[in-house]
Length: 276
Ligand SMILES: NC(=O)c1ccc[n+]([C@@H]2O[C@H](COP(=O)([O-])OP(=O)(O)OC[C@H]3O[C@@H](n4cnc5c(N)ncnc54)[C@H](O)[C@@H]3O)[C@@H](O)[C@H]2O)c1
Image (cartoon, rainbow, N blue to C red; front, side, top):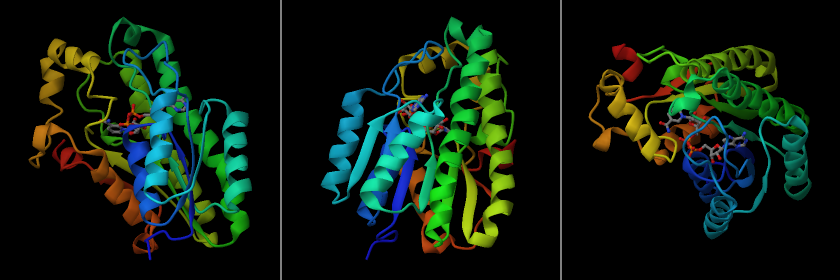
C-alpha cells in the first residue's frame, strides 16, 4: 500500500526538475497525477525552459512507475488554461487531494535581469501563477470532503533576502517567494476546519536545469561574493540538493505522516536560513 494510495495530485511545472521528481514519486506511492508545463521559453529567462519532449518523458516515467497521468501544455499565468487542464484531469480521475504549486523561473542572469519586465515576469509566474494553481484547485479539494494537502514551492529566498546584486529579476524572485507565504498563511487558516492543510516548502540550491546551466555558472563567476553566500552549513555533495531530496519532504507533508502540519514554512535547506 503506497503512502498516497488512491489519491490524485495536481502539479504545475511538471515537465522536468522537481515537478517531474514529485510526479514520479507520488505515482510510485499510489497517486494519479494531473499536471502541466508551459513547454516554451520566457524572454526574461536566459536558460531554456522545459520542452514538449520533457513533458512526454515525465508522462513516460509516471506510467512506468505504474501511475496514471493527465498532462498538458499550459501557462500558469493563464487561469482559464490552468482550470481547463485540471478539470480534464478530474474528469478522468474523479477527485483531487493534493496540489503542488511548483512552476518557477529564475530571471536573474543576462542583460534581461536588469529590465523591469524581469520583476514583472517573476511575480506573474511565481505569485499570480501560484494563485491561479491553488485557486483553480480549492473548490475541487473542498468538494471531495476528505481534506487535502496544498504545498507551494517557495525558496530560501522566501525567508531571507540573502546577498544579491538586487537586479529587478532577483528582486521579483524574492518578492514572489515571500509573497506565496502570505497565500499559504491565509489559506491554511481558512481551510483548516475542512482538514485541508497548506504549507510552503523552502529549498536551498537544487540540482535542476534552473541552476545547472551555463547562464547561472557565468552569473556566479561574475559575482563571486554571491556564490560565496550560496554555501550551506551542512555538507552537500556538489553544493546542490537533488530533486528527490525535496520530494522526500513533499511526500512526508502530503501523506498521513504530515496530517497535523499546516501553516508552516518548511525548509529543506541544509541549515542555510538558520545561518543567515
Ligand atoms: N533549483 C533550485 O535551486 C531551486 C531552489 C529553491 C526553489 N526552487 C523552486 O523550485 C521550483 C521548481 O524548480 P526546478 O528547480 O525544478 O527548476 P526547473 O526549471 O527544472 O523547473 C521549473 C518548471 O517550471 C516550468 N515553468 C516555467 N514557467 C512556467 C509557466 N509560465 N507556466 C507553466 N510552467 C512553467 C518550466 O518549464 C520548468 O519545467 C520553482 O518554483 C523554483 O523557483 C528551485
